[in-house]
Figure (cartoon, rainbow, N blue to C red):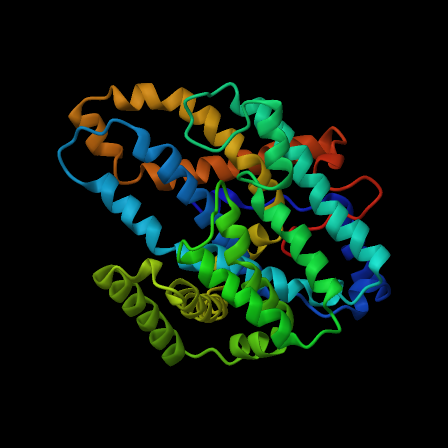
Length: 375
């Protein structure tokens, strides 16, 4: 699947980098090298995002009648990554945001806040139109002008990651000179309250409330996180993975998912494991290189994959549900993996096509440099 999802880099940016390398001048000569482990972690996170959507919005909606609980296993497996996927994604986002937040307000307001709000509003409209073609596709959608207005303002859609980044950048910039504990502690409390179900969280507000603390952690603790990655050992990988597995088992046995503070704490353990695993993955250059390449272009996959999945669901749901026991038995185990690869590959191909017809305005606020949402 990873081999089939090699990302498409911006041609102009690639040419600029090659030019800088030849001349030894310009930003490429002085800027610090991007950490491959962080980009690889982003690549894994976007794969997990798409895989989760494939499982819950398509795979589990199919009428499987093979007599074995393989679909349930996929659903349970996907749930185990919930404390890891978005907390790690936002932690890496915070790490990459550390330099951007130091820039003047006018720069941050346009390139980050307005940029992400523009992308959110634009792709929300696109999603609303495309998802109308697949009314049975199980996902949040606006079906009225009032519903669309609500998603634009107080209850973000499936594109809530972009909405969250705009708010998080605003808060981080506004509180840049404030004591960090006065910012992080309330964010941690908000995360715990939302995860415990003590706060109304319609739509995707839960993710919005729960992940601010991880963005701030990446922002404020960038040196410590980078040091943690740089010193990752096999022993630490075993310990953090064991701690994560133990926390998941304990949470499942005790039903503690809704206990106050448990979910954020398990997510902290998951992020520690995720950073360690991504850093250790650098030993396998072929794999980490492909993941890092994908991790540098998460934006097109993030905004395009849901409409692609909706159309594929429309085409595949009936035929796959109608297969006999033998046919379903042959595909039931690998279906989510294959479809995840297809969705990511199609998203990147569409992105390349849109850039070829000069539709770069779909991926950046006109007049600003195109950036990844997690930088």
